[in-house]
Length: 429
Ligand code: NDP
Ligand code: HSE
Image 1 (cartoon, rainbow, N blue to C red):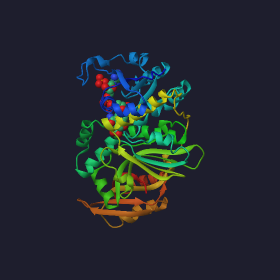
Image 2 (cartoon, helix red, strand yellow):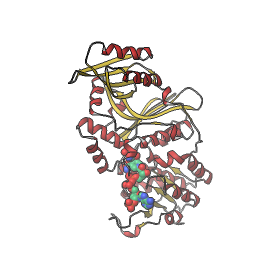
Image 3 (spheres, helix red, strand yellow):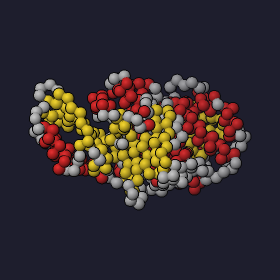
Image 4 (cartoon, helix red, strand yellow):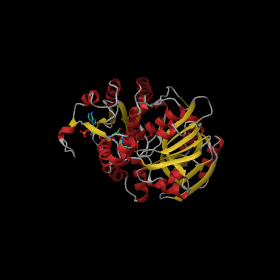
């Protein structure tokens, strides 16, 4: 039950996002009172390590997080500890105890969103997760509300700040992967385990959440094709530039035309340099989408970091507060389960590849013949001579089916004039 004189909050986690959230609630107190109609008061904060130095007095903190979510003096629980457990059990308990929930936890929502939001809805409670996708960029709420009347045909996003920061630093400043990752960690962008960022898990969770909202069903994560950025080299970035492209880690989802079926994937992608998505740098995120009535739309902004993410968390909190003030019954919007996903082998797109080959007559002709026989047309090429009678060739294909491309690439790999297939990436035009 709301206490309409003040809204009492418990924050689970006081790391990058938790501390930013606390700061924003304090620093913008006046704006928040004006918008909600009463003050928001942080009562207690849950942490793991009681010995860590904190910027607030000790009485705020407890390591007993269950005690916070069970506390009858708390109306709203903000979960910003991350990971699956104990976050999931704590959110379940918070809902059981009648508390509204705001979370920034993309892994949890991607895996359990359908069940949790349905539960909140049944209990007349709010469960919001704007910060789970795109940090400070409002994407989730516009998809749920303002864009809800559209048939969303395709969405394509730079959704991981850490990976985008690394790719930008590798490109602009010629930093190594490890140097750039250290910079992202220092700035508070990276997940507790940066594997989630650089191997595409974080982007996978985010595009899965967006797809679930846009298409109305939770996406089975094992049906999402996922690749990270570890294989992107400065050499590929430079060849991509020569061909007029930038390399970005994208989460992409599109309708296939079959009922209740999408194709959803995460991988490094060549994007034309004049596309808005190609211009997204550093820890900035962006989501480009096409809706049947709205047309093309682009959201962009800071996708990670303490204050931008706090902005999304506090926005959700204000939404909950306003709802409580009018005695509303909660505005969680449920979605179902079991979306069908087309396998990546059936994708039709263009491809980039870089080969090291024997620098001798007819090498090109033999490679082109193998691709041609598989129906894979070559559209553009760059070539340079290496040492030891070797050469490097980069091709861009015309649009073709992925299974034809990959099987013909295997045949090309077996040619005696081909030393190695160094890399290949998908292209979005
Ligand atoms: P941090 O690692 O900086 O902070 C995590 C906080 O949670 C710490 O205070 C930690 O306690 C506490 N915590 C972790 N596990 C437990 C546990 N088992 N019991 C009690 N407390 C625990 O994470 P972030 O703030 O970066 O991320 C939090 C959430 O926000 C994640 O879901 C993340 O994906 C999401 N997010 C993060 C963004 C970012 O830019 N960092 C952006 C958007 C979303 P202690 O302080 O004692 O270590
Ligand atoms: N680790 C995430 C990123 C935080 O780098 O984008 C924001 O979700």
